[in-house]
Length: 397
Length: 134
Image (cartoon, rainbow over all chains, first blue to last red):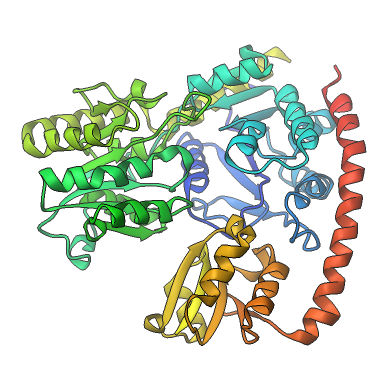
């Protein structure tokens, strides 16, 4: 294989996600795939359900069995043989150069394909499933989970992680650090750009004269939405015409509602629910300040790489982000955004007020954020890093 | 007034697909994990005197835990309740299907699940050894 030859990449998503075609994983995969396309490579996608994919990407679905739908986790171990059998036929037909698999629980299919078909295997890991289940969900069949996870982590030729802290965690977990590549998430600056406009949403929502503090994303554990909810009363105290907009949905929605009702500011927030990915730039366009108040996990460091941060940056928005994990690296305080200490709603409100009261600062932060995105955080750089990992694998064979 | 538990689905799409007036529907957003919270779900169902209750999802074929949703209809007395999706498909509660199809099927699923787990506890460590050996 000549390293600069065009390649065909197989993306494989094995989790059961129902029919949900919006949210973080969808943005992540669509972003990476378009990154490969921009570089002139071909991608096809194999998944357990429907997916919204960029144009020109073939989707193969390998559905879960309909028998195992009522008891927790049982459907996952059973999916191994079913999906491996089906994907082998797809590989025979498509002949990909390598596999890019998103790591999920109870699945060892990547290791199997590497062993039996000799397919180079790159594993994208955005969390150690054993840790995630133990701390954020419910851990059933822990030995099965651990065996499958260890198999994939050990067998993979290269592992792509989204942050330095996750790399450290994997090394502590026993994974060989030499094969772990840190590739933070990204954005497409031609999809998210300042001139895109709000598509009339601001008028539709009756927010024309408001100062909009905005958040996009899933309301999950590490996103810190409850910190933003706690900050609403402080924001309103300083900026009476502010509205805090939560674009998204998730587990913590009731918590946001409870906090803002308790503080008597429920009428100052707007929760949109999930919106189509293509509408997100228009929503972000409305924001006067964009926030990402992520928090550390209870017993370990924040290990994510929030896509929202890069989307805000690409939109040229002044950003207020918590100083945790990779956010503290991407955001240079006072240069391309402002940082606040995690879980400090008053400080978050204070930073928002700084931007509200200094238009020059807001403009300067936004412009620099946009510049850095174009220079460093385009998804095509992310795709290139995966290709580099692939070239290393080929060179080592 | 109707009660809709929304599982990732969109209220407007569901209402349009099933001819429900959105102004006549109370929506409770949940996800799959919330279905295990018996007190919460039954509490909501009994909170007010609703005309009917629904679980709304994106696609019926991709929605888990149908059996437990049917049990909620049974225990809350919503015998006209249904699981509905954004494409207009309906899985209605019925005593006949519950007794003659769904209960036998859940027994089959439970037995098959036990076998899957036992088999996996034998297979996974072997696969780990086999797939990771140099």
